[in-house]
Image (cartoon, rainbow, N blue to C red):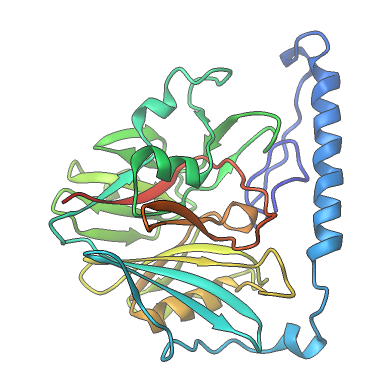
Length: 323
């Protein structure tokens, strides 16, 4: 979860930066400190109420084996299917969306260029945060998930976010690449690719959209070793061989007694079982969100608990269906 530092991002890769006093107008520092203290109190209450309560040691240590034979795919629209994955023994709740990128009525959308300009209270290079559901409702997506990791002064008391890594939308580059992380690229011919590192060489003019993530977790069917194996909420994307089928995966892990979440390695194993050959980890933890349009309504699919606080994130990935 992203509450415990002045500048915050994903817990796995967090950078704390001091905030100088001269950046605050009179009285603002006091209000900021009060808001920060409230954030810490809130996360303490959340952790004590929904941590590992109800999990036996055997459940916490149980190995993960993907059980996908019994999952039932449902049609969201032509070219898009969704399924829910449950494992009561682990326990685990996950949600996956499968997208035919070559379907003539399917297109990809990412957080728009206008969001990076003139955002009230934000400096140059920042974006005004919004929830994935707000993104989905504004762009009328049939499926949407959160994407890039980000820095933020405060998740709840400051609206601006700084995207970590590349963001390209409609051929326009809105943030700089970060060579430490991978990215998901969409080309003009509607095919997609996952790259291990964000360097200038991997962003040719044909890239229509690009979304930075954390680490590549699956490459050519091989699960890549990871330094961190802690189970948590995860958002990840995968591509089937050929780059024409996209998987959007949301793993729940905020309410441990219902779903432990998955590690990076386990997320890769699950995506491979679903049919992906390559996969990339997006921002996870409390940012992890999946929204589907079902019965003409934008529904928050993950996280599924009703009292969850929906965090404004930096960038989002969406799928649009146009008849």
